Structure formats: structure tokens, C-alpha cells
Image (cartoon, rainbow, N blue to C red; front, side, top):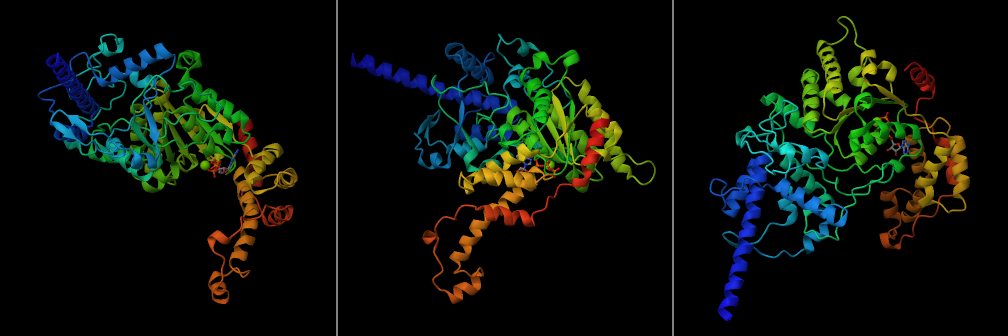
Length: 544
Ligand SMILES: Nc1ncnc2c1ncn2[C@@H]1O[C@H](COP(=O)(O)OP(=O)(O)OP(=O)(O)O)[C@@H](O)[C@H]1O
Ligand SMILES: [Mg+2]
């Protein structure tokens, strides 16, 4: 009886070890297939396993295993399981980790954050990745799940563009993505992702609302496919530079943090969010817009709108400042533009946000006034924009400017949808003031302050109102600082005169904002927005 039990225990232990080894082999195979060669080699060295001796069976890989697990949970519980969660810094310190018995004896696993930092960054993989063929140039292995019809496609790899996933250890840049990820993860400890055990109860809500606060944290640290092979060291360098402008962290600008601009929001949801979410409806005549232009006075919320799209959409978001391209890459900007669009296709579905686009695409001069390289770059951009219309990938160009009349007509025509982002009206100004001053003001005075400020700020942009509210909220703090410094205001002098400068813990909280504070701040405030340009925006709006 005893012998029988110990044989059973032994058998179970053997099975567990085999399971651990199999997991490692699948992970190794996955790393190699995705092009994370350095990481895979390190894992081989650490685990003592080698893909030259043991490899995943032909009909199994990690992606399909996870996909099938997700589908199973969805059928069973009606929702997809949550596979990863955000890890707070404290978790990392407190978490005690059990020793893991590897195929070659027990060893202590690395802290989650460290092992995660070597994980590849990935793009939004929901629809896109599941449907994608995974034939890899290095191995020729495809998605081996026989039930997956897409996986039967042979040889094309990520065929819809001419970029190849990295295959060579020698390419040097090919493993840039994991390094970028590591850097990001170290910089912002609150956004580390850690794979955790899952149970049926820990379920992800995949059905977020379109115009509500982004409800999930899964895009807090975006993962990207590894850098593709762009063909030459020069292009590779440009590509690496552009990839730095991809949002890896959620910019966290929910739609409802933007006051007003309802029409712009609606148009953007229709143009970008919906086609990404429900591609089945946006075909043929209803094919999604490929380019949208946001224009309006400075500080009216154009960049905020773009960030809200990045927050909501979860596409790969290239946040490109046009003036940076021009100043840094004057000679090379034509190549840069080509690489940018190549990468956008490679990482599709993606959104390219070209901020301050007027710096890049002002009207083409005829003759020697225009720099030759700048002309070539514009021509390249026009070609690429035309390419978007024909491309099957979901790549969307969002441009913003506060000088739309400066833009080349050919460009304006290609940015099919043009959206005016206006200055806030009276009601919007009230809402902004309320949101900003609520924490600083008594509830009984706040409506009066809202009214006073909203009436006095006709022609102000959202950003001007923010500056004004900051000035108002500073006033009680300034009073307190004077108190702290013995009513003198000059720290160096006061501490000499009054050695009993109040300590941090002795200070009372700053008092509330008074109506006098509001009046005083209004006296000195001026809007930075261009009053006199209102007419020009309207003219552009009427024309286009
Ligand atoms: N509609 C709005 N709702 C809430 N805040 C706003 C709004 N518009 C502007 N702001 C405030 O103004 C700041 C600047 O906005 P943003 O950078 O989006 O302006 P912009 O239109 O891109 O300006 P620019 O043309 O100078 O680039 C925001 O960070 C925000 O605090
Ligand atoms: Mg901006």
C-alpha cells in the first residue's frame, strides 16, 4: 500500500516537472518565433534547455494555447479571462515567491518586474494578432492549430507589407523593443505588468463604452512586436527613432475629461474608434476615413482629443511632432516619412498623429524658395497618404494644426475629414472652471465664481482658462507661504530675521479661494488664444 502511494507521489512529481519543462519549451519557441532571440538564448542558458534538442510539437504553440484557453473561458463564463494585471511597487517588495524546480533542479525565479522587462512589447493583439498568420522566416513555422483556418496559409508571414520580422541575432537593432520596454518599466514602477495566475472569477470586461472613461488597465504598458528588418542600417536607425514616439503607456485622457467639443468627439469616434471596433460595418462605400485634420486656435484641446483616441482605441499610436521631424531630420525627412508609414503598417492597426502639421506641410513653394529636401518629403507624404487609401491595413492619419490656411491644398484634400476645434462657449467655460476650482473653493461661492469667470473669459481657450484657474488657486497658497516665512515672503531674509519659520507639520492647510481672489486674478489675466484669427478659422471652415 505504502509502496503504491510513494509510486503515485513520484509519478505526480514527474508529471509536474514535465509540465514545467513543457511550459519553458513553449515559451522558448514563442520567443524565437517572435524574434526575441537574445531573450530566448538567455532563457536557454538559464534553464539548460535547448531547442536543438527539444522543441514544441507540431500542432502546439503558446499563442494558440492561450487563444483556446480564452475561448474556453468565454464560452464557460461569458467573458474572457484576465491574464495580466498591473503590479504596484509594493507588491513587488512584499511578494514572496516560491522556489521553482526547473528541469535541472530548483532555482529561484527572478522578480516579476525583471522577468517582465525582458518580455517583448506587443501591440494590441485582440483581433489583429489572433487572425494573423505566424509563419516566421527563421523557422517557417506557422500557427499550427489545425482548427485555425488562417494558420493554414503558408509562407507569407506578415505578408501584407514588405517588412520582415527580425530573424538575425546579428542585426543588433532587432531586439530593441524589449530594451525599450525594460527602460519604460524601470522608469514607471506603477505600470509594470505581471502575468498572474487566473481563475474563472478574475475576469476581464472587454466591453468598454465608447464615450466613457477608459475602464481597463490593459493598455497601461503597451507591448510591441519587435523591430522589423527595414533593409539598411540607416533605415533601421530611423525606425528606432520613430518607435520612440509610439505610446507605450496609456495617455489616460478619457473622453469625458475633455469639456465640450461634442461634435469633434462624435466625428472622431465615427472616424477612428468605430471602424477599429466594428470593422465589419466599415467596408466599401463606408470604408473608414484615412485622414482627419483637427484645426483650431492654440490650447483648444486638439492634442487632448488625439490622446483620448489613443486612450480609447488601443491601436498602435505614433505621436509625431512635425516640427521635430523638420528640425532634426531636414535632410532625411523623406526617408523618415517612408519608414514611419512602413512601421505604421507593420504595427497596424495604428494611428499616426502628426501634431503641428503646418510645420511639415505648408503650401509647396514653386521655385528656389522651397528647400529641395522639404519638397521631396512633402511629395513622399502625399504618396504615403494615397497609399493609405489603398492599403488593407487599418492605418489612420490624424493631423492637427492651428494654421490650417497654411496647408498645401493637396494635403487638405487628402485629409478627408476636417474638424474645427472651437474655443469654449460660455457653458463649457463654466464647466471647466467648476472642475478646476472645485477642490479649492467653498460650494456656496463656486457658482458665483463660475459665472464671473465664464462671463469675463470670452475668447479664452481651455488652456487659457486653466492658467487663469491656476493663478486663482495659487493666491491662498501664496498667503500661506507668507505666513510660513514670517510674513516676509523672502526666505533668505526671513529665516535670518525670524528663526522660528513654521515647520511643515505646523502649517495649516491653505484657506479657500475667495471671490476677491477671482477678481484680482481676472484683472491681470489675458488670453493667449488668437482673438483675431477667429475669422480665419471660420473662413477655412466654410471653404472646406
Ligand atoms: N476642451 C477642453 N477640456 C478640458 N481641458 C482643456 C480643453 N481644451 C484645452 N484644455 C486644457 O488646455 C491644455 C492644452 O490643450 P491641448 O494641448 O490639447 O491644446 P491644443 O489645441 O493641442 O493646442 P496647440 O494648438 O497649441 O497645440 C490641456 O492640457 C487642458 O488642460
Ligand atoms: Mg497641440
